[in-house]
Image (cartoon, rainbow, N blue to C red; front, top):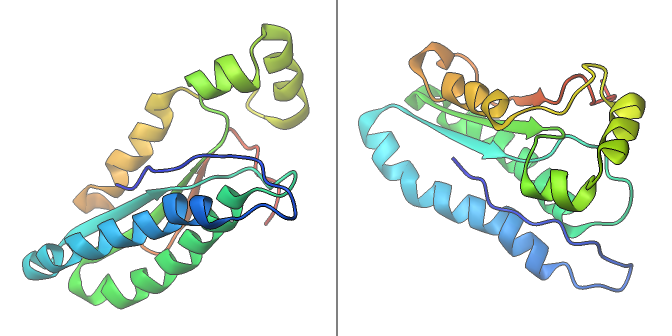
Length: 159
């Protein structure tokens, strides 16, 4: 499971190398290092934690995570016949230190965002993401590959 990342705002002139290295290159390198043992067993899964919110502005993490989506789709197609699945999980607003203390530090801020953006009416818990990952890591998900699964209470708007 790849869960590296950071979300630092960038301007038009900001270098994106750090965001690309952390959010995309590291994911690819780790996965590629583990693929030989999965190929030998003819079973395995790669789960990438990416993002589900449409970018509100310029951010290197968004560029990198979109790159992960494209890479994961191609890898899924190449590895499917070997019994290896590759998917992306796209969490929405999940209770965490970043969400609860930095992005929405007050109950009012959380409630305003929820009313405007989250049809389910609440932020998710880490377990909501964990259940999805546990399914994808199981043999029950053997035919699920190359997918982006949103765990966001209906927040994602695009088709």
